[in-house]
Figure 1 (cartoon, rainbow, N blue to C red):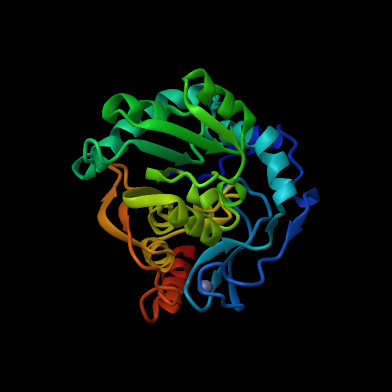
Figure 2: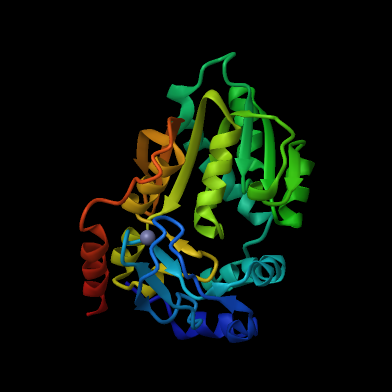
Length: 304
Ligand SMILES: [Zn+2]
């Protein structure tokens, strides 16, 4: 296993001249999952080598970048830095066009995950939150006949989605006014880790999901990536304000009123996907007793 910070990779990232310490940041004071205010430092840098610490909530074990960039700083980051940075990290060009090929194969995997739950006639509309270039919505339109809508804050990606004929909204779902519309199936694919307010997003999705509908989402499993690389730093990155594990994701789902009916892991291990039905929210749902302390010990054991 090569350590993620090889000299070649570090040189490619340095060539971007992204001055992370000069970006406007803010501390995370209150845990977005449990409301706790006590944080334990876990790492000092992220996988790119930027001085972006990750902390663990002592109440529930949620891992977040802390401090993190402000919403305005993130908007500038996604407009000009994000894709070049990911390209530099992987050593190949990744942009709105090249990601389409990967997204087609991803879309088919998600279609197979959802297929047993799809009722012809009952499910007709699909909203993809953070739907990027619309590939998943276009695939589901062909596969299931659903009318797709994408909401995404990135103008380049929304333009690609429009070119595929998908209804596209440029913006954030938390502040979007759908004008009373509801959706039969809502997806949050490869997006939840990028959000600034997970709780508000899940609450909004719950509010606009039609009765009898399905919510499907996935997380990058922070635990898996840390173990796989034998490095906690390698599992953190400035583009992921949140780093989820199954325990924290499932506590969030319960609090927002989603009950998983299917859970699946990607073949390479790093994604965990959930198909959920809407139920009554359980606002006090938590990670299992003792999880925060045991997860902290588990992550600290990887520093050897
Ligand atoms: Zn917490």
